[in-house]
Length: 451
Image (cartoon, rainbow, N blue to C red; front, top):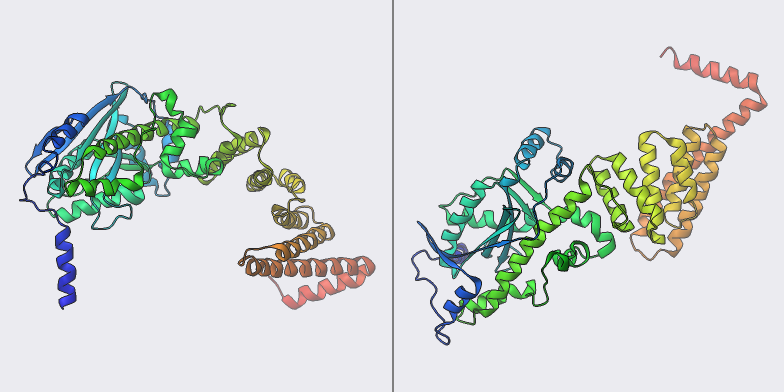
């Protein structure tokens, strides 16, 4: 019982103190909080729940881009058709969009994590209007959340970067813990991390927003830079130092960091919109690896024709050796799904020599020659070649999980080879003794009875 009471006591300690005094100046530097407010251009926001700091800025870049219906359909792809229609209707009006990014007291989430800075942005007068809410201490949380709920009710379409996994669940938990401010209902939520990861991870490795700005968005051309940026890992500690009476000057960098993330998020949407739009040209400026990543994303979202086009262009522009065979494999699988088995077989023949994908290619050719060419002898040859490649690969593999996977594949191939050999033996018997074979067939049919 005592342990249970201790748990509830710790949870209660996490709740903001509603009647505590507002954050006051540091005793060491009495004028520093006023300097901080001036440096960030903040104003004091007030509502029935208390006070918080509010910062508003307008930026001419990135500029507003007209959303493509095809892009929105791909980004909001869902198997629930009813929900999909509601989502598309909400997304159709960019005036209802709200870019969101938070700075928090921890990167792992949980009930003890606060969003002490919430940044919002929306298209306004051709540019980007940015509004940020800042908690001077935990007593400001109710006031901040009340203001945030009001903004989301006006613009209920959220666009985030990893917001579905982190930012929005965290904010929902903070709304719940207030017990007095309901979490606003979203009309739609687009998380740009997932398309970004699909398109650019193969080339960049890391798809952190700052990396995308540097290598994809061309931030200098858009008029911003991050030379003096605050590292995300240091942000919680800077805020805790401030709460303990430390300097508020590092918070200026955090506010600017949040502004840059919001501008980067808006620019990232524009880039993704141009790639996914129905009029996308996929010109020579798009690297081949990005095209291949785009083709795989389009294929997963149910756009096989556009996926094939992007994949072909990626091969034409030249792919690294280790990716080239994968692209050929993707093309062959797309051809097979379309029912173009001749084209698929031609592509499988091209990648037989690959040490990894060659195994799959031989197995697919075995299927092709058995089912579509009715040539069990040729099918058996490719099945045996796949088995030989598989055993060679297992011998040199360093992955401890490779052996169990290879054993399963080997059993499947042995079963196929045995079946093909039986089919070949039966066909030889038919050629050597056609009358006997016909009699056997008649007897077998009679024994089965009418079907």
